[in-house]
Image 1 (cartoon, rainbow, N blue to C red):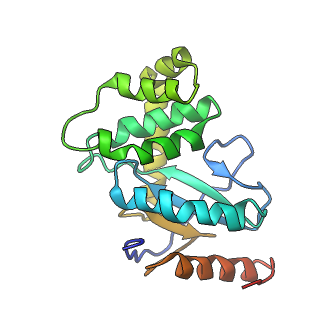
Image 2 (cartoon, helix red, strand yellow; image 1 turned 45 degrees about the vertical axis):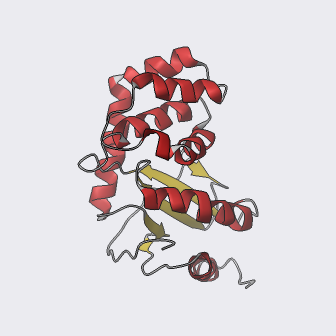
Image 3 (cartoon, helix red, strand yellow; image 1 turned 120 degrees about the vertical axis):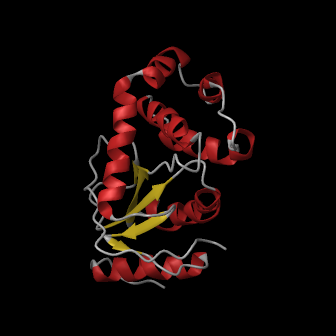
Length: 200
């Protein structure tokens, strides 16, 4: 299934800022697609590697929407999800969040599961992407990093998200998505409602 059916109400999102590494696209875009995601979730991997590149190509690169990623690690069922989120946060501090995001989703089968992944794995992934491993290693161990991930988790729970991935467009949850085409129409409808035109 392309994306699990999600029925959520009263979801809210935080406005993007130019300094927020988790956003991709113009800060003044009228439409924001927020993804509450867990790096160890196989459904999130499917979304990130199948749907998101198409969204970015058609809507983000053309300036019509921005994407916001919010860490939503489900630690009760995914033992490595919090550490993966912390590693991605540190990659974001180095200006490489989206490349690290893609990289660890691609390699998810290597590190997900019941066993805890060794800390050096995240550092090695950073090194493979050309990220300075000294500051990355320090960031990974910093209490501020854990606090940043916890803040995202609180935001997700406060927004009413109960599963991953949860997809929200301009504050409204997207439910019943079974294909990229159905999600594309949701995005186009949001663009039209926001006064951005409709070019289906």
